[in-house]
Image (cartoon, helix red, strand yellow):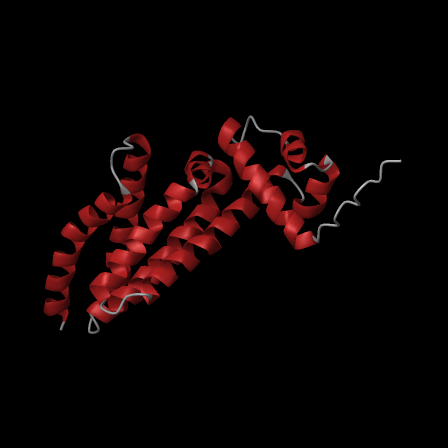
Length: 199
């Protein structure tokens, strides 16, 4: 007589991560509008009502995907900056971590920027998070700069990173290292001058 191995019971937090992984895969393959909750449920191996129990709606599932990406992005850029000593290297390493994260998580990146009608507010939250993070890094380079200056410079850097990332998604010959250096070549000299003038 064949004995069956009992299925392992999955906790709520683990199940939610499984659902988010599956949702990103399905949304990335089919696009958010064309993807269905049935397809996500099938990918995870659960029933559709389980998805609604965890996330409430398809929009809720998308926003949960974005929320996770936001937390992950801050974690990797913060960790990269913390591994450096000087302000220039902190910005360089955190910028490289940004590009590396987007490369490893291409479906999440595509999702954020192709579904802006649903994700617009959440996307602005990510921009604000990264802008505040970079402004804090820049304060070490320009300790006498006004908060508004730091925010302005950080806005420029975040916007440049987004455009470079978009360019890289269309031109796969541009590496994360190259994109980082293009940003640093242009930005750091300007920051050094601005730091002197604000001192």
